[in-house]
Length: 402
Image (cartoon, rainbow, N blue to C red; front, side, top):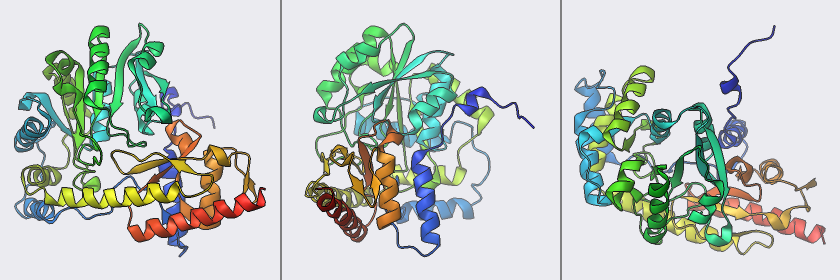
């Protein structure tokens, strides 16, 4: 029987990151000692004060529907956070709380995109950006960034893909997967370009607390013109180790938020009530646990970049934020490793999983086949052992390829 299915749905690709992670988990379940570098979540537990507030919410029966766009207490806490930390003045009508930052991006695209509208995305990109654009009825348009430019696009890059169909630009700083951070001057230039061309900016700032070099600046804070065009995306997952709690939020012009709220009310209704109450404490309570996690990530980043750059055939830049490293594998292409000729990032990722039980994410999932992505959201013990295994197989193959 031939099933007549959605053409739009059939165009959506599965997540490469989830695919590799699932295979690694299956191997672990069989008792195989797999070191995973695929994780897109902190390996720390949610801070105690947030956990306790979640328990209190359950015990006190705060388990019913909330307003579809989120509870007023959390919206007020978000407004205060944005004012204190990002120099952004919003009121509660400018805020929507969703089931994770990914859900906020989905709502934002659904609110601004008409069929055929183009959305500019820098490469390498987070795997879900192009698929979310397709789901919304838009067309993803890609701008290739270069490692020597810190994996960042310039306005001259944006000019080359600008068309009369361009509706929005997705800006991710700090970036997944590259760790790139746009500085204030770079953001000013991009903001000027967006205002001149009347282009929306979806500014994904979910990794803003995980910055090691430089400073995070929200593009919306530069002036009122760019603020009106910007949808700021953030959430609790990365900074507060709350990935499973599923709380993201967006701040934008009231008209945009109104449409996003209408869409959410008919699709998911409100985000989890318990998680919302816990998030209020996360944003307003003691922030010392965030800094402790950031310092641990910084230590791991430093060790990983030094070690990767000591492996003959691999290289990487030191990321300025987030918890990922893009490892350049171009020197390995055409060589044989573990009996397999390496012609792609997927080839290399499969060899590492099969031969040395190390799970990495192939760069093709982020639109760039010359890299693999390693996450340092795992223990230093795992990092040392995993990199040792990679070093052993790569350097062994270097000898046999000579």
